[in-house]
Length: 484
Ligand SMILES: [Zn+2]
Image (cartoon, rainbow, N blue to C red; front, side, top):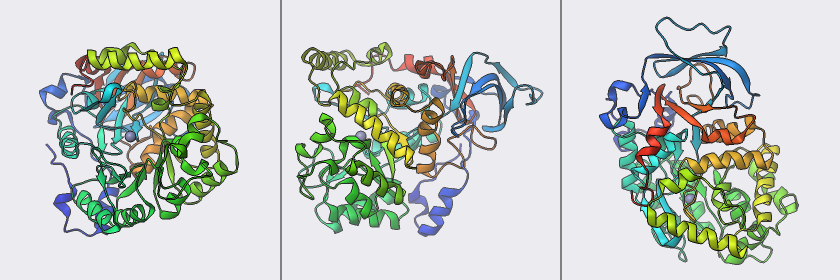
């Protein structure tokens, strides 16, 4: 069993050496290191595997390719190409997959290991989230803000050491916010406090920092500066600081696309967050093609600030946009399901949700404009809000929403795989289906390019070339979301 490399064990190294360490190719997890609990989900563990006759959407943005064969050897992709040309090695385990689509393992960039939901529910999902992410084809996540950081560090270690099934985890520190915030978040009210916070969580192994709505520019600037000195990156769900201000401060990534941009409120006061700040984006009166949008996008692209789209979490607040998914209802514990359905019923029966349909459509247009301008867009589920966007299942809904937004299947897959890998700095090893990369692959029954709903038809998920059965993982969490 390979011990997990935690930053705490290499503190003596310089930041330069840490950066070099992060750039090393990732090693593949091997079947003999897996516990009995993990092995009960494994259906393919041969050293050499061939997936034949698949339609491939490879994550590079290339058009879907019919009748391809992918050869996996020792956890890595050894060969990819037309079935007529790729030689299947002697002794390979051959999976004949005509009628299936293969995409890269997806990379969830706003994928918490906790859950909040209607009725004030909050629970850590150390059991259900890793299984649901893996079952749904999400093989890498960035936690993007933690509530129980040590539970998340321990979950990551348990996955890395083969004790539980789950995706690769990029740890984000607990949220930092300003004096008007609170709850489970750290309130930082001086630049020194911000630097102290970043130093501590960097030493604990966090590679990302998440700033929240009430942080002030001075503290955010100090946090970004300290994070960058330590090789960490910073993202934010902002409000008191506008997108354009955060870009000027050197932030690396912005969460939630257009729907948390306070830039669109002409009456906003710097360093203060009020509900009025985000009314234009939520009510749909902000113009995704107007001067504020264009200037915000221009500055983000100019400074290489990436963006995470989380359309699914907002769709749940839009009247008339119920997205029935029996798998989601089945996975919820009974009380969580009842509370969620009651709120959804209220929104649909009154026709009044927190987000206007036009706001959702504008956010889709903003995502498209950002990509068209050369911006690096990624995707995440954010399993919070009403509680209807579950780990994995909600990521799959994002794919359907990207298609509705006007992206092609190849673009949507790239947003959900290669782009996340680039933002995380792991594109050398993950994010596309290319020889030499780790064999993280998702097998879907059906033709994804013809029907976006096929994204839900996951049969087998390969992580490090080991195949996990999606249905067994989903069955294991039935009735447990909202409990553990
Ligand atoms: Zn979030």
